[in-house]
Image (cartoon, rainbow, N blue to C red; front, side, top):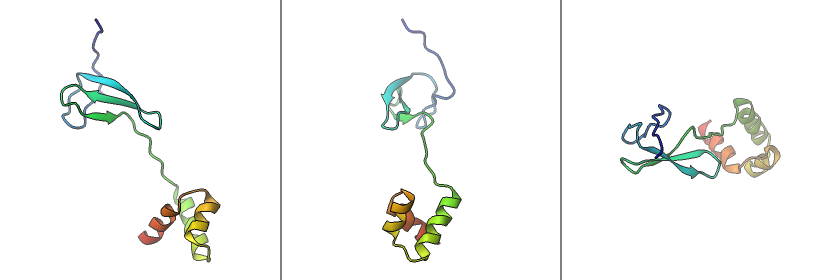
Length: 91
């Protein structure tokens, strides 16, 4: 019989319980997934976030406003053109 441990990091975001939290594999980025046995809610522990720095955003906007298309900026900086267009909309 496995001994059940209570880990503060494994708290269900839906019901808030810390007991009956079990591993449920990994998501596409390799982060641990868990399942709450009480409410059957699946969630990720310490999910990875990718965010571009302000310098890269400013560089992308500078290139765009110098006459290069959004798609061209994406190719130059190795990112999605949607990122560039979203940054343009915010300015």
